[in-house]
Image (cartoon, rainbow, N blue to C red; front, side, top):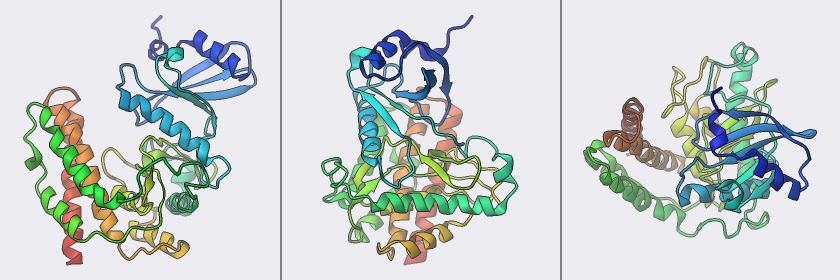
Length: 351
């Protein structure tokens, strides 16, 4: 019998010993199933005693930066406890790498589904009203996150909000330039117009919105919806969370939101799509319910398209060097080109 891949990363006996020390149920770990998703992190759902758990840890051979994100995620989830933000419930975290070879945490399972992973369930696929609510529910989750005071929940030192917007263009331009280490990648010229977008962002940068918690990668693939309604069950994958300007999350949602065919940025694809709200309707929903000034929201959308285009181009650069799948690299490169083109089109309309 083939040994499950997750067993190389999770020693069940060591896990049980650690859980004993934390007084987290007792007895054997049973029913272990590796969960799939759009992340490289390992997710294992299992039962111990009367309770179900989901373990999240970085992949084998992950570098220090990747391992550090687990601790950051656990800290954010702990801070969100008791808030109105829909999120997985943190049970316990372990930063001692001698237990499983990397930091990990345990959370409660989320009963829901990812809309971009497969065709929508029958209830959601058959109701235009439920589909429409799914988009607005995502905006409501952002609104609740934007209401959380980082200082009040212990995240006052979690990020560097001072100068957050001012740092963005240089930060991501430097990321793009760093892809030169990948042999075969043609360089920043692979993204025509990226320098023009960078100059526009610098010239039109608005005053920042009130500081808050950002998810950092807020899109359809990073939320789970309830199986019985269009409500968000949980926002997941908090590894890019920080403290800064929350309007970038709204810009990110717009930048990744699917077109009329249901195709969004990167690998986001939702079927069927016909009942979902438009991106403009999502922004209007946010504007009507938030005291934040959204007069510069288009700037945040351009920034999101600039940043995401650069991140997706990293997949293309790695594929040029043969270190990631060629087909995925081509797809992400096409998406990056589309995002930069959309950014330029929006800039032209604002001129």
